[in-house]
Image 1 (tube, rainbow over the protein chains, first blue to last red):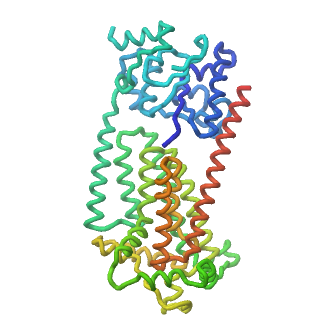
Image 2 (image 1 turned 180 degrees about the horizontal axis):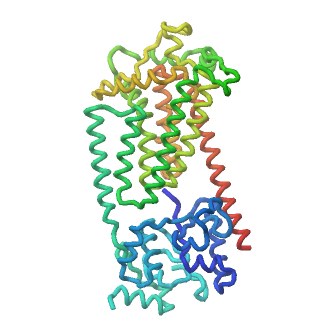
Image 3 (image 1 turned 135 degrees about the horizontal axis):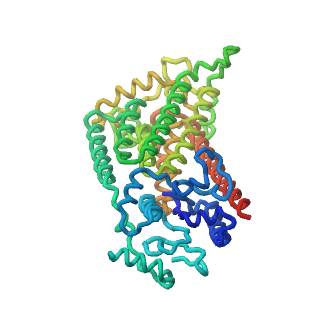
Length: 134
Length: 349
């Protein structure tokens, strides 16, 4: 019933929030393109709670800044446990992202990390030469 | 190195792999949520028990029974979810209870006027002839309640009595089932539904206070002084009882005793009958199905008029209030999305 969810992955979040990042402009352009569909309620922007934490304090009730449209996918103990049991990747953050994508039926991932392209996700890769959609 | 690891490594190393990926399923790699099956089994068991209860004991319609039944359903639907989700659920439930308590309390006392901080008492005039006159104006000088009963009411229960009665009773369960289903599947959609629903209740209560309205059955009842027309039959339970749902009528009578008999305007039966199809309309694709969905509120209003529970204008105003709630919240949500998008654009510009 909900519009498709686009997950802003950790690497994309960091680039988006850090204006000095070499990929900031590319990620910001891709993110701004998504905003039109967000406004029309054709998609939801989400991010994993653990990855949002450095950029948004828990007491920030009023949404401000670049991440104002981004909703939080709250991580529970069960998600961490599932991520810990995964053997496809040794990176816990990547595993957690995959768990959240599967459990919350994420439709698309905006990321700088090409390894997400190996999964049956609609991945929007930015920062690897020309932007790629796989 | 496992096959999956090898493929992941290849994905990391090879830029050409991005264009033509060998993808593997997330379902394959992410450990399954074992409690999901438990939830499904519990919810199916709940459904079976509810149907058994409905058949043997009757339909639970009083607020407390409904709250308990929905509480049990939510426990089944939330087994194995995170503590945070449970916390949010508890807050939601508290809000839900406060909403209904405020509604019951206001509705129950609305006919006695309101005290403004103990300074003065506001009494609003009882609407009797005004609503009847509007109905007569809409139907070329006829009283729709009287005309329908004259043409269709018979001492024996007919098929349309069953349809009217069952439609009338759906008011007590359908919105609650929708709330429960949304609660279990999408908190976002549940919140959207509840905003509109609570707005209906709020506006309804405000109108009960400011515009206490005598329902048609009371307008003709010999026990009251109005006697606008000959007594009409008040038989909302008849068709339902005919289906063999025992134990239901007692609950219904208890609720009537505690309710406000002059809370006819607006008809929340008509409002609730519209809010459910109206909420799901954007997801219904075939046009014919949209039309079918929207016939439900029409059947409800016809039933209400036939059963002598409401004037036609009560139902029309109820629909108007529903439309208003949808318009307001659609506008508010659109505005909020635009505001958030603008915030992001400004921060990134």
